[in-house]
Image (cartoon, rainbow, N blue to C red):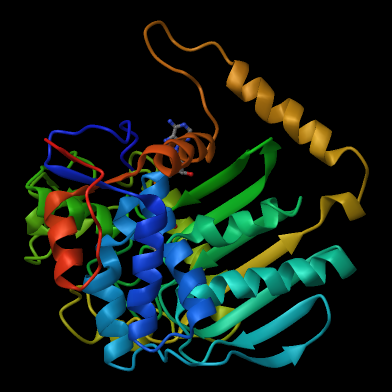
Length: 372
Ligand SMILES: NC(=O)c1ccc[n+]([C@@H]2O[C@H](COP(=O)([O-])OP(=O)(O)OC[C@H]3O[C@@H](n4cnc5c(N)ncnc54)[C@H](O)[C@@H]3O)[C@@H](O)[C@H]2O)c1
């Protein structure tokens, strides 16, 4: 994630109003057939990436991913999710190819409603499509004083191979845990279980930047810093933790845990299927029929004082003294909330190439100021 202040960067940027970006993105999705209210919810989920600095999952993906997804029928713009089984606290929900950007948020709202009644609400989703940032959906629970957990597999898409393995089996399988913390600054852990999502490699390739040594390796396991090597099929994405010697089994294990909770549970498509072992082991498979884990927990129904204790705990993290010349110390979600506040006030800086691409798609995004 880019945590640089929203104002500056070495690349050419165009600053646009967040509200205009949101409205134009919603209008674009509506032109692709998504009903207006859900197009707005989807746009909020997509622009959250740009607002918080998780720009690998922001409007960068509008023309590259969501437009072809909707135009090809991979996502059905007017799909209506259907409950397949309802146990009260537990729901099995078929998204029926609904656009994940809005449908995962609605699934969390359903989970929150169930948690308000039962203390816990689990919505296990199959038939899903790409939902963008996991954290934008998880934090909906935190906004209602609850703990939210969201995870997604990548359907049958296989990108990363197990440590010591020669065939790609799993996607980048994101995971998010959100909870109330300090006012206006919820805890939002939001991450891929691979060392980075593919979008971060692709944004680096787009900007002509090298990637750090731990992100990609070649067939022999040597570090690769050329970001474009990934899409040329010459480099592999690593796991959180790195190689087998530095904790990579933990990232891989987390990726498998997400596959289990998000896909095996509802019966969605899964990466580690026998077909994965039939070809040359290279990345492949389709991201149809994605599975989501959407969980809300209501701490207030278990005991009093959770919110105060959370404020104290996360406040203590903020008070941690920084190393000399480093810091400040923050908890996950805090820097994103700060950045979002700044972007709402003074605009979102888009790379000039992305701004031109979005303009080509028909979004009207007047520059607040031309920067570098
Ligand atoms: N839909 C999908 O298939 C898919 C797949 C992979 C990733 N993603 C999404 O991509 C986005 C980016 O993922 P990522 O792995 O690049 O995340 P990241 O590396 O940018 O951030 C990971 C975590 O580190 C925390 N963090 C970063 N800097 C911090 C600091 N200074 N202090 C405290 N905490 C800090 C963040 O709050 C975040 O919770 C996420 O929203 C994720 O859900 C989606």
